[in-house]
Image: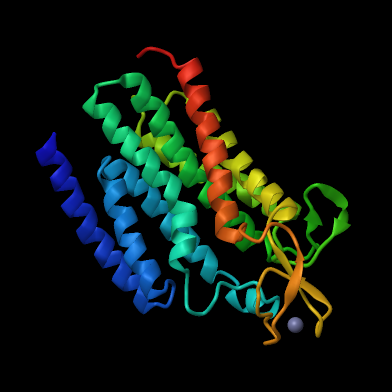
Length: 279
Ligand SMILES: [Zn+2]
């Protein structure tokens, strides 16, 4: 088992470095973000190439969508920063996936099939959440409708603020979760039965909804006096420093991502333990 782990680690490290160089050169990620992503890809590869492939499909799909309609997003001021994704964003989306990957390896070590299946479904759910979230954001912002506040749907808010949802964004979110779940289903045909597939799709989707709820209710918001607008940035896009408006100061976008992934993937873990069928 040790040889296999070492083999996986080296392979993951090499592929991770290769991907980091490409994304860094394309300005999709910052330098620290690229280094963090190398750690993440090697730790995911530790639990096997299939898990890495699922993460890789998220990476490919989200990168393609970030570039989709980039000009429209720039006009609406919601495009990803031109420096690329920060390391905190990488941890926010990949942190839970690493944790489940390590538990997955441990389950192989202690030969617990129960733990193996539960950690595998949680790992896939965490990726499905990230993908649902990205699809909701990247496709949702292209919607012509103004986003509605998820916990007060009669109120509309500015595009790009956390807690805002559109019909297009929610369909995209469901599609994003379905995409990762279907790929995983075919990769693990002998393990993932149709009931588990359903759990994965709903898990990924509800993770994105939880993300919107935490984002809208708890995440810190700032106010720009010059533009009379609420924003999530301490320096507004107009260049003016903003003042605190509401929310918890320690909950920023990446914290929201991490918390929703932590909550939903943990719930999926326990649901799987409860309903698991012997194979
Ligand atoms: Zn401003």
